[in-house]
Image (cartoon, rainbow, N blue to C red; front, side, top):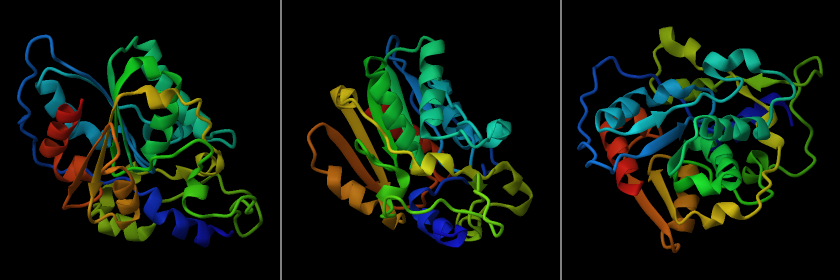
Length: 266
């Protein structure tokens, strides 16, 4: 599989990233009643850092909640950690360590787009610390799934290489995504290349993630790639599922509604 084919395949399932608007966000989420504040860990998708949640985090914090927005290794301000050993396990450990080393309990763990992969793996490792698992227009993998397998890439397909035959460590956001997400050209530097390593590593689950009683899915109807996931869980026991009109980057486009959704399903 060459780089062009890989980018084409990855275009829908790993979509993530957009720029924050310049307008100041007003906190519209109702303050949490005393003793009912929540702890949120919000995981971004491919190509971007935790900054995509800035507006949502501000609203939640104004409502009295605690919010962490970790950037995954090799991306955003952690781009210096990109190397040939970075894989899905690295991103899972990024999330697990935020939870463990901050001694977090009763966590609402949410992931957007590609972020559905590592939050599932992380929740499986620390299921006793997670009370609610939230997928925001995201992948919902099962045991043995990888990004490539979910996109229908046959097992054993060759890794993408450059014109000289060297392995490609990471790939940029496709130009059509910059356009569809409305990213200003002077801000595109914030969206770093997505590491290749996480794409091919299968996810290994113990089944502990299934013990988390509250699971939610938000599908944005413009994201045709995620419609089948919405349909899979819309009537599933233990799942709260909603479908909204609007773009893939709901945390940027409609931060107030996104924050409200997170509080409602917490």
